[in-house]
Picture 1 (cartoon, one colour):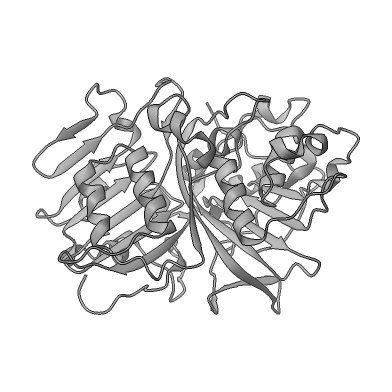
Picture 2 (picture 1 turned 120 degrees about the vertical axis):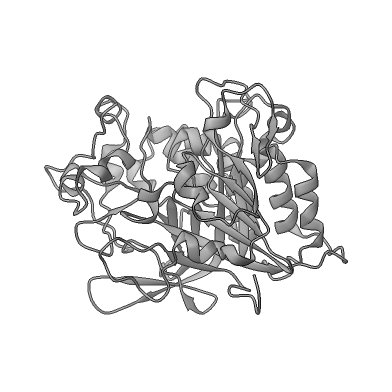
Length: 423
């Protein structure tokens, strides 16, 4: 990257949609890569279209790629002339996956961090509405900058993914001083060496730690007084139940479920005390998508899961995309906190609202996580009322926080059902 840093304080940007005029803040993958100045890129993704992806890079750029396509190899790292292919630990290789969507882009004098909600496939950058968190940091190979919470969390997350140590060491020369009001949250599959050593630093337990540092509640002997409305947007639904939602809701208040067992397991507590909306596209929305059946392959749940007795169907709410007859592929959470619900935080990353992503707790047993995930919590968000049907505008660092969906809470209509993909 040449010249001044484009995103020195971090920003959220949406991806454009084919045939729909984008806002001035929307960014393509090519915009983010700035390929003419890019020296090396670290890329993590759930699925990848390599021919399409590689068409974005100059032949002189070297790449490190972490994706599920590497999981059938015995070697942890495979090197070719231009691509280092990394296989993380998969203690249960038949079920555990890489789902994180992270780009680290190294230039002569800077590093760009991009946290994506889409995969490295063309559809996720053209016909499915996604967003990214992008942050530029100055870099000087002749200096070693002091570490801070953000840089340490980033380094640990790269080591979790088995990124070669020499690449992780490049972070020593990056100045992360302006990584303020942004906090890394990751998940790592259970059973690996690093996960066993740091199991309480992942998923919902990491989220609880971050929120506790920001404005965690102090429980009393009678429980706690919830003050957060949580709107969770995703493109995949797994097996959910109210017991898990209670635990997750506690973590969103900065409380660990094990310290609040009386509340979590008191089934006399009404479900409506768990103020969580699970936003997921309906069957009708997918059928009406202007891009046709191609969109449907990116929205995933099973009818059998939805019909399970304990599935929290009354927690489902509609996603309201910014553009009519389009679909949102974002993984995000909007947390509105306090009596007036005018402040809070926003999560953006790869975690869907699923047990596989955020983890499950089993009494005194270690937590279980299925996926590699990566995301960021943006703190100090303000929610302003705006005119029109958009309802609320999120503001972060005095700039609009542009999301590809409206921050509105609309329960499913009587005849609505989530979209059931074909498996």
